[in-house]
Every structure is written in structure tokens, then in C-alpha cells.
Image (cartoon, rainbow, N blue to C red; front, side):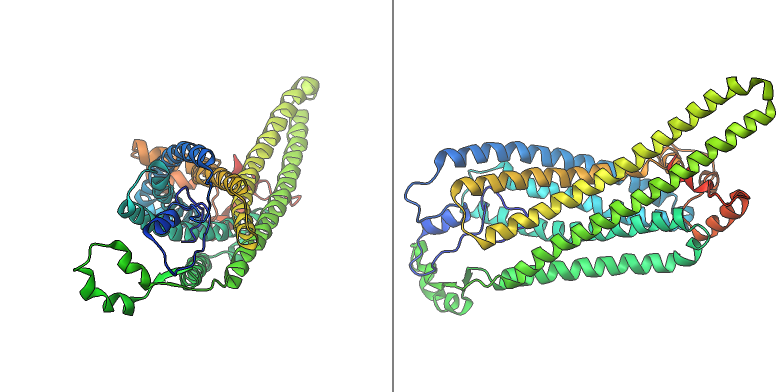
Length: 431
């Protein structure tokens, strides 16, 4: 029962001898308590349950907001699909929004076990099944999100830094191929981890033994008759070590790529703003030499505000990406620490609290990530027109601003590139 996040009912993996298991042992195993402990930490467990309920409410709230927000964006993109999907950047956004909707659903499913702690054995088993399903979907969604973050960062880097070569590097066919590859890789890693986890469970039911006792079970009311069919497997977690350690390295690599790319983009945009400042000052001087001193200050102030806006937008994107990748990597580190050494009750509860906080940031990412798309003026117009309704054609909405597509990019660069070689038109993407 190695879930993605840990839970109140199963805070950490416990392994028991399968011989002579009783119903109390099974109940303790399902509730994350060590049946061998003579003095369980009742106070700590009660505090954990109360705290978990608060986190569960927050997960449900964040999940509902994520579903509504991403569902709205999905509706807007699908309603304008004929023209929107001709731009590769909107194809990436559609993929992101779809995955964020799935993460919102997983947040609600994950919160179910935190909202109800006094369940019977049957209810606990159902919660465990739902938790395993949500953990599977959540692991897939997180891996796909990490790959998509890397792709969309590289896309923006190529668009800003290599505008002339961008149409040749980024095409619809290549983008679709990368997205399909990301889904396949994420699904394959999720399946492999699930197979390894199931194969190395500490307790499983011997079906042959269960079939042999089928004739005796209907004559007995003693529930312990089925326990001889529970078999013990020696856990071998080498594959899980490799998986979690690989995810940590991959998160660090993606974080480094994201930070480096956006720092470079920030420098490029700063140069563009500085060039605009110089050009605007020269134009103001030529238009009215007598009023040069009066006109220069407003021009400088306007461009300084623009520069600060670009810094704020790109800085916000970096922070959102960094917090998400750091939170997910932290969860993998906690899994490694949990598997590598035994932990006391106090340290177990601390680890669970840290996991809850990290998962809060991951759930919050499903809301903040789509909000980052609104930094583009044409995307804001697209959402407003789709939600509020408009008689304007979708092509009119997307034709006023350059977007991330090969055909549009060739026209924009050819028409807007100044003689001195500065790429001013690209900065408008972040307005």
C-alpha cells in the first residue's frame, strides 16, 4: 500500500509477519498503526487526524477551483479550436489545462481519506482502493506536468532568442510528437512503478489457498479463518529507490533548465526595453527639440514601468515552476528517507505534515499554472470572448498579436524587425 503521498490511514509502509495474523493486526495495518507497539502515540495520532481533516478541506477547495478554472479554459480553447489549434503554443496550453483538470480531480479523491477517519474495515478498503487509483493518476499527471514544463520553457526560449529559426525548429508535427512522447513516457514510468510496488507488497492473498478454504468458510463465522491465506513477501525496494532518486534528479534538471531559460529571456527582454527607451527618446528629441527635457522624463518612466512588468511576469513564472518542482522533489526525498531507515512515531508524523504541505503547493500549482497563461494579451481576449460571447471572428482575436506559430512568426519578424537587428516584436508576447 505504497501510495504517492502517504495518508492518515497509512502514514508509512509497515511490514508484518503474515503468520498468525489476527483481525486486530489487520485493522492496525489498515490504520497505519504498529500492532507490536505496546504504547501507541494516541495524542500524536489524534492531532494528526485533526490536522489531516483541515488539509483535506483545503485539498477539496483547491481541487474544485482548479477544475472550474481549467474547465473554463478548456471550454474557451475548444470553442475556438479551428483557429486556436493552428498555433503550437495553444496546443501546449490545451495539454497543460487537460492535465491540470485531472490533478484537480485527484486532489478531491486524495482528500476523501483525510475527511473520514472512523470507518469500518469495508469502508477503509474502499478508501484504500480510491487512494491507490488517485495515486496512480496523480503520479502520471505530475510526471507529465514536469515534461510539459520543460517543453513549454524551451519553446519560449527558442521563440525569444531565435525568432528567425523558430519556425523551422518548432512545427505542429514536432509539438504533437513531443506531447505524445511525454504522455507515453509518463504512463510507462507510472505503470512500472505500480508493477514494482504491487510485486513487492509485504502481504498478499494466496488465491489457491483461498479457493481451498472456500468450502469451509460458509460453515464458519470466524473471520480469522482467512488469515492463513495471507502470505508474506520479503520486500526488495531497489527499483523504488531508483525510481524516486531518478525523479529527484529529473526535477532538479528541469528546474535548472527552467531557471536558466527564463534568466536568459529576462536579459533579452531587458535589452529590448532598453532599446525601446533609447529609440523613444531619440524620436521625442527629433519631433520637438525644444521640449526634449519635458518629453524625455515621461518616456523613461513609461519604459521603466514596462521593464518592471516584464521582470514581475517572468519572475512569477519562475517562482511557480520552482515551487512545484521543489515540492514534488521533496516528496520523493521523504519517500527515500522512509524506505532507507526506520522512523519513530514523532518523525513519522513530521514527515506526514511535510508531505501535506508539499501536496498543498502541488494542488495550488493547478490553479497558478493556468493563471500564468493570462500574461498574454491575446489569450486574455480569447477567454473573455469565449466566456462572455462575441460576434468577432476568432481570427480577429488572434491576428492582432504575434503568437507562437511558425507562419505567424515569419510574418511578424519580417514586418517588425528593425534595421539595427533588435527583436522588439517578441517582447509583446509578455504584455
